[in-house]
Length: 177
Image 1 (tube, rainbow, N blue to C red):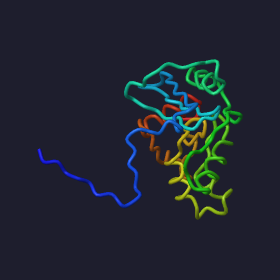
Image 2 (cartoon, rainbow, N blue to C red):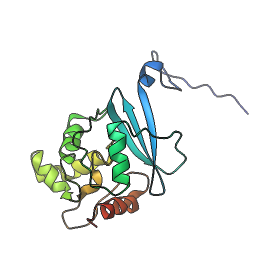
Image 3 (spheres, one colour):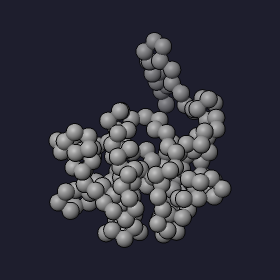
């Protein structure tokens, strides 16, 4: 097999593993859910990532942490509010962060439309951009993008692993769908 060299621009650094300063104070918890796991990353007391994975998730979970305890309660079918869970967005534009902040206000067991969020950002013309921002949501459930639907009553999209089936499952858990 021929060895191929990759030319990188001057000053470009390729990282194969995160540097230690990115891993410091990082905790990963895996909570069994649906057909897989909810994988929550907490750094410095802030939830920075919450995703659904169907493959094996390494590690257990510590219910002494408030965010983890609330997620376990949610998974067990309890009515839970995540508004007081501290989050930190490690990426996303200002627009994305505004969309995610508004989405956090949608109560358990209720849905809102993409247009509803767009109106709070300056007009219904932003509805598609709202959908795109929700597709980049790094903290599902706590930023409840599953509670956002189309204005005509359709579910809209859901970019998480599990897709629309998972969105339906979450909405059924909350008594909405």
